[in-house]
Each structure stands twice: as C-alpha cells, then as structure tokens.
Length: 136
Image 1 (cartoon, rainbow, N blue to C red):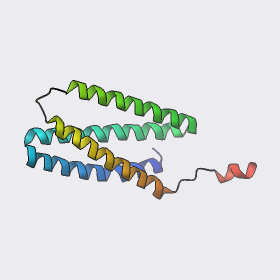
Image 2: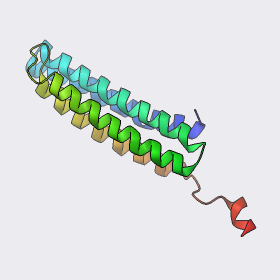
Image 3: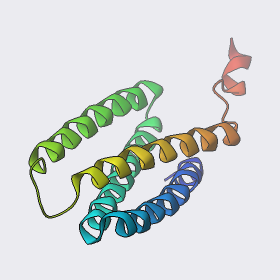
Image 4: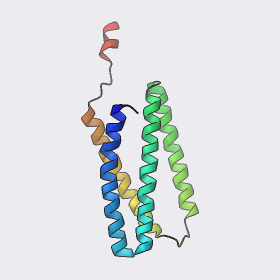
C-alpha cells in the first residue's frame, strides 16, 4: 500500500469508526440490543466496503490511470450489488434492527466520504508529472 493510500485510509477510517461507535451507543440507548447489533453491522459493512475499494483502486493506480478508473467503477458496481443483496437478504430479519442498520450505513458512508475527500485534498498529489511536462 502506498503511503498516500495509507494516509487516506487513516483519514477516513478513524472518524468513521468513532462515529460508528457513537452510532452503536445511541442505537443501544434508543432501541436496545437489536438496534446496537444493527448499527454495529452497519459500521462493519461501511468499513469493509470502503477499505476494500480504496485498496483495490490504490493498487490499480500503480498500473495506470485507466486501470484505476476501471477498478473504481468495478468496485462501485460490486458494492452496490452486494449492498442490494444484503438489503434483500435481511429485509424481514428479526435478528437485528434494520432501521439502525440502514441509518448507520448512511451516516458512516457520509463521514467516510467526507473525510476521504479531506484526506485527498490535504495530500496535494500532483496530477501532472513535472518530469513528463519537460519532454513535451
């Protein structure tokens, strides 16, 4: 994993986990054990989905920008498909609170995305390689 990828992962993962822990506590207080379990599963889904996506795109970016874009699109489609499958599979479950599950996914996704963008903007990664600019 590149140092940039690790930095972005830390920038997004830490706030998301903190907000996720808060969501689990609030869900436990408001809805009990099933709500807390639903919130915890929601945090787990977001952390796994976005971590895998970041790692896959980061590795593909070492190959080329086209590979990175293809990897980003493919991981997005896979995540949407898996999330849809989870929604269908747990539609009528009584094991955990599906509302806490869904709400936690939405909140943690917004937190992850916001802090990932913040991480990217603070890295100041060059999008034009100065060495290549001299050759043209």
